[in-house]
Image (cartoon, rainbow, N blue to C red; front, side):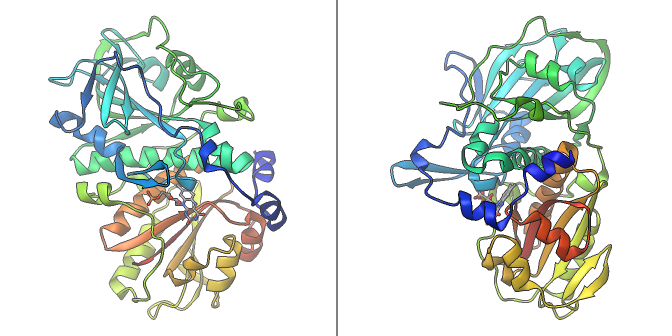
Length: 407
Ligand SMILES: Cc1cc2nc3c(=O)[nH]c(=O)nc-3n(C[C@H](O)[C@H](O)[C@H](O)COP(=O)(O)O)c2cc1C
């Protein structure tokens, strides 16, 4: 993993060499479409499916020049959305049991295959039929590699984490409980879901319960549909087939999320100069301390009266100082972040797909819980890794950064 970390770092020289003109007309399609002849359910028609549209939907559509520009309920590095979402539904009243693709752009669920005694359970570590919903998040690396090259490997897992976090949030908003299923057979799922080398399964989540009835493997793989309109190939397919190790920790789970928060989520593009109340600052600080293992959260508090400026770890100030400008420089000169109240830097000594996925899930929680307090958040994937490590005085790998403040 150390090798992948080194291969995917950003350095000032690397950024200078790769920053240039990007022809957005060549952006690969961010949406996968199954054939029109398949049966499906439109969003908004069946109450039991509400959780699905809250998990993945278009929440903003604009026209930029000749191209439509969509934003989803999940954030994504560069808004490229290298993820897809599938759900197996079994035993839900009024809904055909089967495996569905969630088509956010067309606001519907598309039934790929009906199921009965067979299902995806054996590929997600379950021995019996699961009554309810089994979600699978996949990633489509070329959508991100197209812009970010090798760095995309990290963004795919972070984005997949945000997507998994959205399922957890949708469960919270609809009064249900979702579990992260940590024991997935990535290769088996890759084959059986009909994926090819453009798409890889990442993580599964369950909402419902395992019954006592046995289940069998799917008889044949689902139809293959290319998730892209064109591809130049995936850089290193084997690097995307690594099954992430992730625990179903409490820290991943958002609390009491409202439907409007999910549908109204946006990344902050500027922060206000208004100072957070002590109560709000305490809320943010304790939320960030709930980060699950193997992640650690460093907090850089900036210009806040109830908290001396400086670096905090586990709630304790380990270094006092005004670091706003320096931090912005290390975040590839993103100076709008200087007005945020706190920058959180997630690190780990167990760098890999599981830690990145966990970081995405946690930051999705932070986006939504902070939004419910009227705060703005932006996930930050562009930073100089080694400079941040040096600044913090740590050998731990940098996973992800987020800025939080008034908007
Ligand atoms: C993994 C990841 C990395 C991101 N990195 C940055 C970043 O470095 N700077 C930034 O301003 N926004 C960043 N964002 C936010 C995206 O730009 C934003 O999600 C996207 O433009 C869509 O906008 P929305 O979040 O309002 O829907 C990142 C988001 C994710 C999920």
